[in-house]
Length: 294
Ligand code: SAH
Image 1 (tube, rainbow, N blue to C red):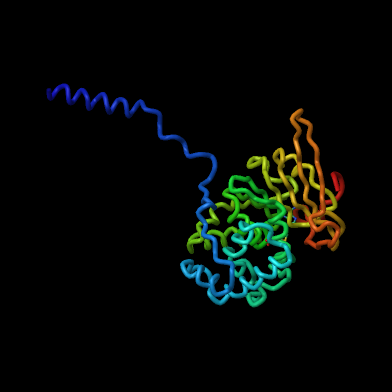
Image 2: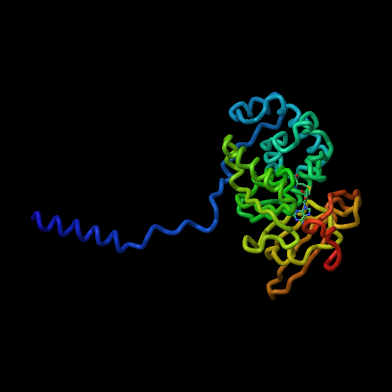
């Protein structure tokens, strides 16, 4: 009896040793499921404030301003669906602006974020986000991380956000900010993956992307970005001369016979132009211009 038990133990140990090793960690980094995010109350300010009570990370002094901006965005049709309202109401824009601009966090304005670049106003950030109609399993690429605010909004809509910034120290600063915010308890920001580099080339290893958002201005659509756009993917990009670009919604449609068609549409239907900081090359290389669709 004793012998058969030890044999059994030996067999079990052998089986364990021979068993395939625990599966290698999935290539995809850990993500936070956006489906688990709460929906704040939107009917009025008092109910919004009450619904944010269980989320102590959010600064109580800023919440009324955030709610007022939300109402203005709603009236201006910058928020198209509940999920974009939710993303706006759950993102602490105050964490992404410079201390000297704190009071202006929720103004209808772009703000300086250092290094000669700016964070877009809430209306533009949310209009571009709405045009993308981001789904939880979409792979999303942003070109121009800047302050990290736009990617923070996206982190509430997709479990897979990738963002590239060309100014190395700005990339470092925003990376550190995200680490700090995750440590504080904003779990959703593990969905944001940052890279320092020239976003003209996209982020090939992580593509293809279902959605691409470009937050710097260029005179054509970079061919590498079109290539990294998945079939039936959407890209939002400001295209045009300095100070006056058209905000384009670009769609890549692949027919059943495998033929690819690119369609372009002005997000603002000709009603207004936008002005973004230039799409630059690496140090001293000037701005990108030239070949490609306009
Ligand atoms: N989305 C940002 C907006 C920043 S402004 C935010 O939410 O704050 C545009 C950013 O694009 C700047 O930080 C600028 O440095 C960056 N940029 C310009 N050219 C770039 C390029 N070739 N690749 C990546 N980022 C670029």
